[in-house]
Length: 186
Image (cartoon, rainbow, N blue to C red; front, side):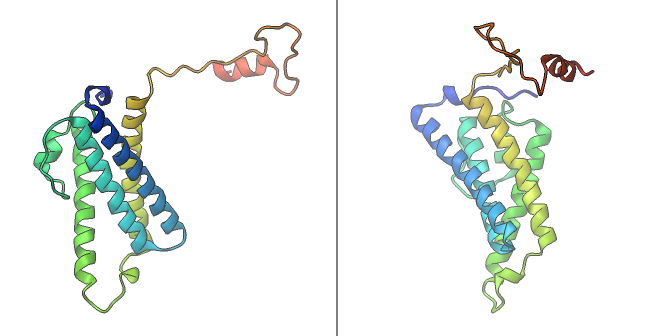
């Protein structure tokens, strides 16, 4: 299902708010990756929750519909998301990921009342799984975001080396006939 342009249909305030939410989502995921790389799994999961929450909020703005002002994602709210952004299968997967992070945060806050540090509650394997799942959300938002920001289709051109002047010489390391073979599947 192709993504449709919906950002331009929104008011200026909504467009700016969406941009803020998308940047927070991407930034949170970057922080999660950084924390994972230095073995801070509890912090990584916290940033993953942050990123998944901003993913959800960004999509609610793009959908242009009224949603309840709450942190948790419900099945009813997920069904309201514009089909111009996510297919039915993608919405189901996104809801499953969102729900899991809501459970993780609840568990973390419950376990924080004990004397045990939350740093030991998350294994590397579980955190890697969570990182991969939110990575899927990030890739979906990146796909949607780029489509909203840039004018499709994006065209790529391969230059032969002769733009204006015939005084130029082709590269001796990669002659043009090898490049043509590469792109023609030879």
